[in-house]
View 1: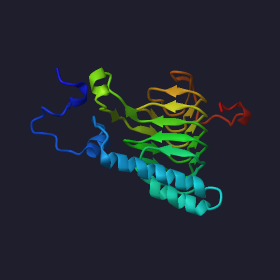
View 2: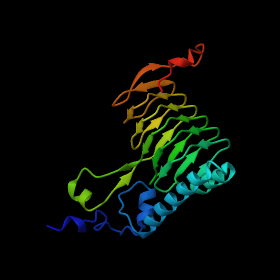
View 3: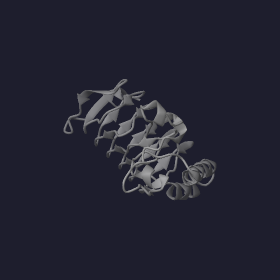
View 4: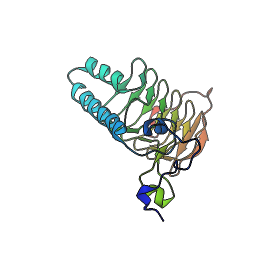
Length: 214
């Protein structure tokens, strides 16, 4: 039996899979880290550190650094450092979104965040997955599934959004929730695993703002 570190799930394909590890990663297929991927991670870390250094004294420069880091970013976006990403280039943020301290957004594949989104402190957006098969996992193969957050979503502090999840427009995710499956639009979801506890009537009168979940 081969040493697990030598296992290659693509070895017997006909025709051979000639894609780079980076191309496999972006496609959401199994991949292993290599020099190209490591360089992308180093770039992301460097730009996150530059953004943090600029945020207090040079807000315009910090915004330009975010535009360099991210795949795309709309207008009037504010991200409080520290920000932690894998690459940054696979993260796309709409207009007027506000992100509090210490976002962890791991982005081997795409993370799409809509317009007018509010993200509390210490939120984690986690696209990476690892094989259940122990030999593949020991051989350091991994993959990822995209995350999509709709418009006008509020994610409370400390929430975790797991690989492959879509959160619909106008949804609210309670502080500390662990979101393992899709959340419909106009829903409030709380808990671990997060479950919908109420629907939001888009026509209802505004409620006391002190009744929020964060």
